[in-house]
Image 1 (cartoon, rainbow over the protein chains, first blue to last red):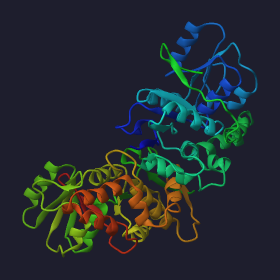
Image 2 (image 1 turned 120 degrees about the horizontal axis):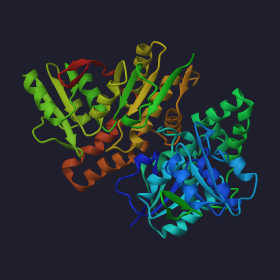
Image 3 (image 1 turned 180 degrees about the vertical axis):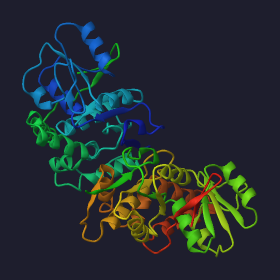
Image 4 (image 1 turned 45 degrees about the horizontal axis):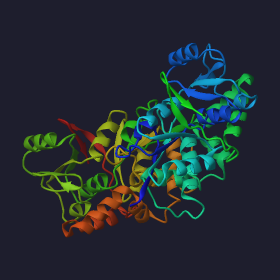
Length: 254
Length: 254
């Protein structure tokens, strides 16, 4: 009997028949890239909070060493220590710190995925080969689902392209597989042949365009273009955030 | 100022900022192919009813010459005159008849599209070039939206591939355009290069597989495979069903 490899182009579009198994959550611009980078640089944990209020409550209960990171409309949330920039995450070591994150799309996607999956990993372009390998190890021959966060409730090319790269990695170099792909999995796979590389694909996406455009308008946002370039680097990280449990309303990734 | 060419991969995913303009609704397997074929073969009108009950009510009020056509799970609805087979629609002339249709995905998609668009056309592979040309004429330089019906609430490759063909036609042979494509429009365009042709794309889709598989199980459904082949014929029809108004709960296409 063959196993299923399903892609969900938005969190709400999870195939209803597929529960259990292993899920890879993707919000490549920028939440899952940023979370991966925090852990790669030594953070004790990354926690995804379902709301700004929940993030504050988690910091209050966790105490010293807890930092809040997140954005609305691409900008740092008022009262948070950090925005959602993977370059900021890469700029120092985070040993002794837990990063509590809340973002517009990515943290919601993870909370939705958790309801249907046994194992939950965070994937991005930087860790795509490692994330695919880890998912294969956890799945032990069972079903795998790739969940795209999307942007403001709309299907987003940046996440779908990244999902295509992850699917390609899961199928392996020969493309031979015991996986049965759903329609969306076949669709995202077609995207990987359409652009010359990840940088071009992210730049073509509406979300990528918006981040690049914000830098053009205001020098304070010039780093957003560098964020996009950083997010487009393929396979440079072996760090794969994995759901280890819950603490209050937060999802704990290590 | 550039105009928008947006694709909605499911009816519910309509870009919220885009209202008005011209919509092309696609349920290539099989509702929009069948509706196109009824009109091509002389039907006075095709009406999309929002439910089985509404279809019966429309026949009661319209009287003689009204026929009911539709499916659930691919099979003719009990008490209906016809199923949802485009080959049945092609088998005779329909002059003097109005066909009232209700299907699992396509008729709902049209009802959703109507809420957001000024003009609504039905598109399929058979009429793709003609539908694109008619949409351009109606849009008069304004926005165009392509709405995929999907299958049972899931994004479907068959409709998305067809949307890609329609987008390609709208962009014209040079691919030069004043259109601003949303992410989903870019994605479906990538699909047209992935399969050697429409027949291969429809056969790769879960919905195509299901229709082909039903023929394998029971000889009574052997024609479903022929339906898929018929639906895959590209650009063979100049007939483009266009919304002309409402009658009770029905959408009237001519």
